Image (tube, rainbow, N blue to C red; front, side, top):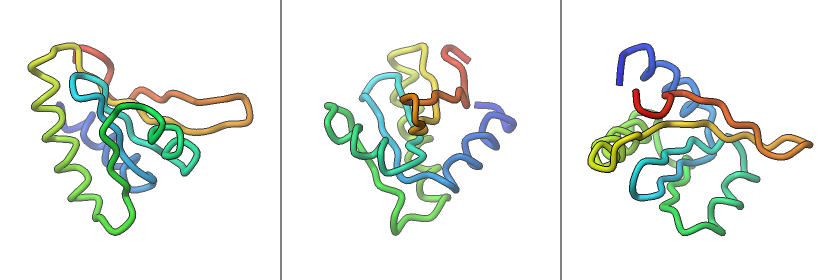
Length: 96
């Protein structure tokens, strides 16, 4: 991860409701409670932002990133609920 990419992730994490990881290469920053609710329905690891500092959350993402490197093609995407569904915002594109 470059410093620029980390900066984008940091900004999203500071406004997030939680994080989600598929255990391989998909890392998501959940931007609202709707995304947290949906994440709980999936078989992914979910971490809630409440009670955690942005630094702690970034540490979790860094740990997941290390795990994801073993799978290859890892990425970080922010997910936000909209009236039309889910908005996907690429923070670190796949394979970078």
